[in-house]
Image (tube, rainbow, N blue to C red; front, top):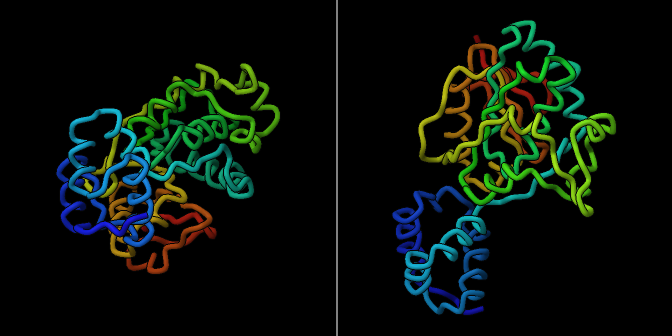
Length: 261
């Protein structure tokens, strides 16, 4: 793979095209991924590749899809979902009532917000559940809206929920419309767009590991502002918030943080 020059200008060009700020990502890792994609598209320079994605809609969408890390599965780390089921949901319902505001941020292909609906359906009627789900990548949002998953992706779903809410289609599994209808998908850039407010639970897992420390802190601070007082932030098992007190959180469990009242 050739060593490409001019990455700083490329980052600026990408921001102008996509509003994705590559400065917020760990540079060595991200540059290696991008250089691989550029080589695959038979381009020899960053400028050549920028011209390609500017003029070719398919290549542009391929680039955005490649940049965003889409590794997702239902009920990822089941022991944490057990805490959500046994402790977090009952506490939130007790505190805020049945009309919970829940945001699945960087939701990827929909595995997480659909898992939230199914898990919450053990506590509330489906018609009471509404999940707001966002991602920067419109391709994965489109996949999420289709709701077709591999057997591996749904392996951790409890058996009763699997039987109730999935239909097998040619070796893949289609999630039911009853679950789909409870999720509202929108495009959202965590590093650029305004954040919604008043949420009782925000779930953002295994995404910020790819961000710089400064970008992580900015996002966690904005999540705090987006939470209602006493609301909960649920992060991934690969992540930690070292300075959570400075960011106005109390730690509940390893991966659950509560906004101070």
